[in-house]
Image 1 (cartoon, one colour):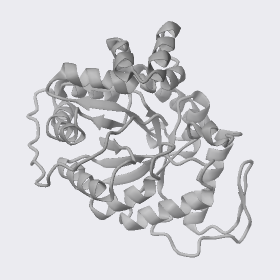
Image 2 (image 1 turned 90 degrees about the horizontal axis):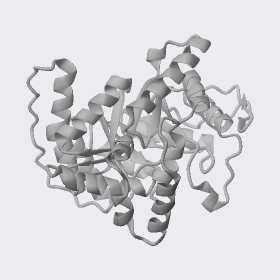
Image 3 (image 1 turned 120 degrees about the vertical axis):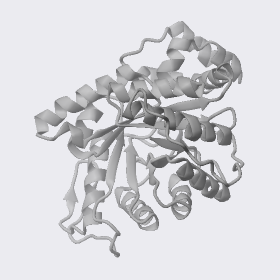
Image 4 (image 1 turned 30 degrees about the vertical axis):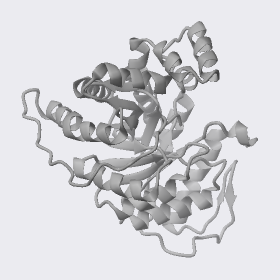
Length: 358
């Protein structure tokens, strides 16, 4: 189980958060790469310096604003700084039309990026002639990376993306879902393509990540999650073929959001829809939702921002109550939840954060 942070914080905040997240026993930490926020790699370098075991990676970089050679250099630097704990998250990217940046042949761009990164990290100087990107024979990194290979995660939602991931990735992330039906569908797509290419399906992890709001006051937590989800529901709901959203509801959400009435928009999100796109409620409710994702086939659940009514409080509740509940369920229905020592660091001050929609 991992936790994701928005890239909108100070260097000191990332240092304190990394320590806190690791002390609670999370397996990994991702930093979003949403357009207009800080690039994720600098924040990840800070978290690398203030953690010892967390698996770290961007969620995600994209091949349209960052050339594959620069991607290779960035992930090599993070891998070295973390002592070999880095993974590379890649996706086609969102909202690039705001920059007048085209996204021609996105799957080809992702395929070529993975191939080039792997060649460069491995010291392969044979070159690469892809359909989106090429490197000439003889080109190489002018230093030796710590490891010749890092895990690659692809952020995808559809069958074509799943097919590519089954061929070249170590993990797939469905960013913005808490929907077990979507996890089952993605798992079936991966299984089909893995069978076609002769790959063991177990070699490809499946990550479900979504807005998370946990609090002892479950109603308040769900109300906050509604507001968060309303801001990106129009984008993500269209990606999920297992969910049908009333067009009139989406139109009204757009109107209210356009007027800056985010809470009013959130109030329109019904419970069943909220549960498809957010992990929200009391610790018991969030643990039950996460357990449902694991049962559907997820190999990792990533708790996304804002975590709680306040970020620090939400992280503490996830670590102190949700993780033990999930681990207890995983071992035995009657197992005693493991004890967790509370971090000694103070709560870091964090700015308001938003959801991962990549």
